[in-house]
Length: 240
Image 1 (cartoon, helix red, strand yellow):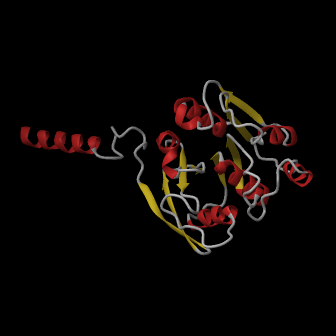
Image 2 (cartoon, rainbow, N blue to C red):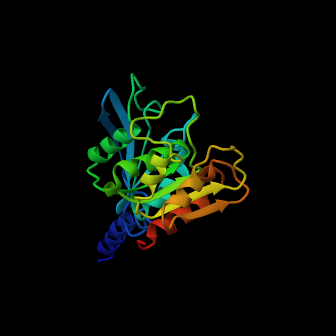
Image 3 (cartoon, rainbow, N blue to C red):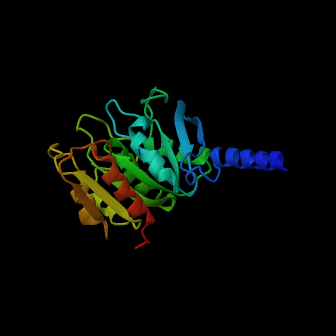
């Protein structure tokens, strides 16, 4: 009798300690799915984890890749299916071998993962991809988070379907957007004349803009807890 009781206790303890068991913390350690999405002229490395409404994280340019979101994925994956990938020419994705569309690349990632509609979270260059994707495919975007949204330098060609947001065409297309949009800016971001937050705020009805004091362009790296709180609250909000 005593031996049977001890065996039951050992089984119960093992179940609680196992991933996903009663002591696992509500699914925060969800399994990670990695792979490569085929695009014209190459492949894009992606990672997905968690369950719930899909959220795609789009990284900044320069030396960054999908790992710049390391401080966000665990918090977001408690409530959402979190997808992040390396944009073409970055990280573990293919290098460009000719003209390409970042928006078409994002669409292929969504298709490869069977995602019909997602919220997009971008920073810097990633915000540019997100807003232009929303302009091309508004029916596939639930919500938009645009952090440190900037215009590309004048000497960089614009990808297909990426109008100058400050132009008459860009402003007209922005006015047609209806999904909720959150703009996040660093209060110490000193990049002059490159950000397009003001144009989006002027042209899209009901945009919310938040300035995080004391940080520069990389808000998610400098203030991850504040950034995560803003994102989660926004994603949990009702539709306007």
